[in-house]
View 1: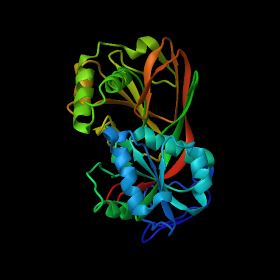
View 2 (view 1 turned 135 degrees about the vertical axis):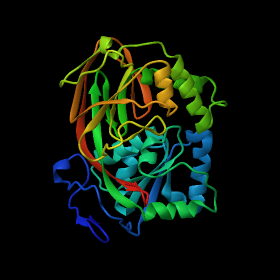
View 3 (view 1 turned 90 degrees about the vertical axis):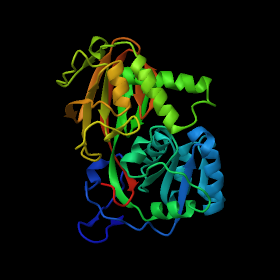
Length: 335
């Protein structure tokens, strides 16, 4: 794949995928006009309080019926494998979970097409870090958005694999254990019970902050043993291993973090009101160190989240390891 216009252009040979040793890392790849093939859209119809379904219909009108796939209709690996030959880029339309699911399919199939984002979720952290801010769209503005995606810069993004008891999942944004995942899990349950109430990003973030402020104190260190000389303070209510700077809808975990340096930022968050203030952008988290891999042992069933998708982690040993890189579309003007 040839990449480059202007200064600092590079030629990158080989696929961007699991075999990261064959990929040239670069932090300043210049803009590339995508080939004159189809951009394909994978849409989560439930994202954005149902906005995904409306976006799917608008994209079909704008780009054609065959350019749009609905998440869940077919296995994603089957979709990307069948249509990769005439596809220039894959666009995830939804929240961070939708992006992660598409990225996992692309990575496991070993294909080189970049992934872009039209954000519809609550946090939209990956989209935010790539410069694709959530904004209103309609039939008249959608063609311009598609054109910006078509002419976007292509950059590498680290992928991580999280393995543990009954768990083997790709991570692009962050993996966390403890109180923040408990808040995400509570929010998930509330949204399931009252979907008609939690339909907007502003309301959702307010609920996140409220739930965080109400959390009871939890010392992660009492329930989780971290290896590799990672020292977690006793006050830490949650530990986040971040691949990108944006967290919980725009909280900056580490201002100088890079998304393609093969390192995760290990960050500690406080409990109760402190966690709520972090979620509300009023308190900064603490950077512990940068790590190339993570190993930790969970002693009891504990909340965990991967790219904003929460669950209860079973007791056992967990590993987070680098799993190569994929290509992503970055909006012009974004780092």
